Length: 324
Length: 69
Image (cartoon, rainbow over all chains, first blue to last red; front, side, top):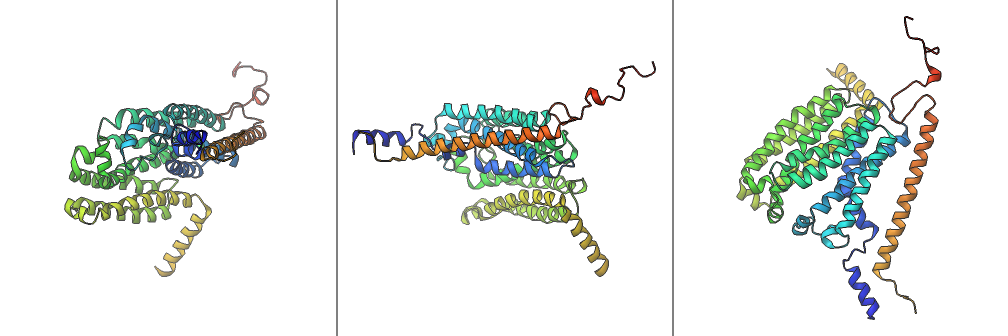
């Protein structure tokens, strides 16, 4: 191997010669996919319809704003990510992207996404996106995450804003429907993340992040999961009686909430030794269910906004009359 | 003598350049599309906030006189 090749090999090993994919990873594509989906639902179920190009632009810029806050989060949390098994391969701890690059990209994308969303749709949507980025990067990442076990409860608001931004992009307003979509994600976040924390506890412990499992123990966390799941139920069911809900949504929500409550009760009743014995199988199932819970609720909103919903309602009515 | 052997570093650099080029091209296309939509919709709309504002030529009171005068 020549000297030049040796030098190149060292550089490629982690002094900031990142590929395009590393920058994509910096924007947390998995989180972005959730942002895209919920923002799209918020936009499509709204009573006012934008031109398809405007809708596409709105969703892209909301996603870009979500990505920007992800980059800012990775910039600030690089020390934590380095310690945690789940995040150790992220671009900053891995050394492929330098902290200054992450900060620069996060700030630049924040500005571009907010201004472009305001221009493409309206100032309210742009303002909400700016507030969301601020809330996630400053309130959650910099302030709450390392200071209180309630970090994800309050920080969860950042993840709950996208459908509200989508709704605002279409209507220029904040309605009860968008508030309920916000609350659905807001109340869903704690049980979702605490279930994850139950079987990833070592990671948070090592990183000294004050998750509820670390500060108050697993028994308290299990109780909190049940309480938040019960509090989530009326929010989810209540949305059925607004303009974005309907019989299909109500049926889906009833089934999902029943399963979610059963899962939360099982977690609450579990003893720690039993959980360790089966490697947190119940907690992992609950975590997987929580993903389906949110996805199917928003899918049901989407179905209710299509003409199929009326057809299905007519069919259900016909069935009830015929056989009832 | 130039470098003839391609290294992972070159692949990363190329992927970054191509990716950035595609992102910029997509951004230009989106901005152009948005502009065309705004122009085609905007005969009676001023500003960008979807607030319907009547332009002076559509005023219901062209003389500018106050009601009741």
